Amino acid sequence: MRVLVTWGSKRGGTEGIARILGDALEQHGFAVVTTSVDEVTSLDTFDAVIVGGALYGNRWPSNARRFVHRHRAQLRKVPVWFFSSGPLDDSAERQDIPATNQVSVLAERVGARGHITFGGRLERDAKGFPASSMAKTGSGDWRNPERIRAWAARLAAELPRATPGTPVEHRAGSIPRLLAHAVVGWALCAAIMVPLLLLVSRTAAQVVHVVTVPFIFTAVAWHYFRSRGARDPLPTAMVWTASVALLDLVFVAGLVQRNLEMFESVLGTWLPFALIFVATWATGVAMSTMPWRERAAEQGHA
Image (cartoon, rainbow, N blue to C red; front, side, top):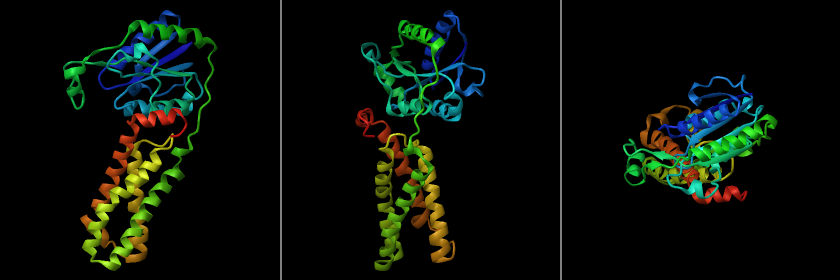
């Protein structure tokens, strides 16, 4: 039986866990390939897959998330397990830490059979923010090789009989829902801008518009991201910003003004676009790291 053990991380701690898992499974008689998600091009030759990710702000790194999305169809055909590396204390030894909301959604999408959280590692000389700041008081290695090998032994007992899990389709991440929120945000902005242009000068209307845009899209983003299975903040912010620009081009510039003059204005057009992107992205990131959202997700309210 051929097993892939792969990981996504920035500082090598998760790689260490993956290699311990790979060595342990080999000792149990499995043919194991242990490699980074960046090196995997196909899953065709594997009978099972174990995917790990380092937790940064309750989220796996982008390369691990992309791996799951890119190979989703193949991952649904084989037994899959997830593991996370992150807590910089002994909490993972004292209790079973469930997958964060973002990781559990990924697991559901491919029908992962299980997940486990291991302690993390942070070197004293870690570079970059916020790692360098955290390393001053929280550096250390909380990975427990014995616990990692014990989990590998449980997998070894389960693997010969394991079948693919049942994937979950999250409607919250559908394209229609994604675009509908962008349209609602655009319509709310238009509903404010139109009467303003009738009551005050164009410059004053643009200033008020710039002030209200981030509040509108923060509210729209909150409604979107509170649902379980919503797409990641960065692609959502990109799609919404592009959608608003397209709607402005077609309806405002094309049908109302019949020229592209609005796109010459930084205050009236380009600054609002930038604020839409920032408000959407920041709201999504903030909500994905909030402990209350994790609890709500477990209770089925997010």
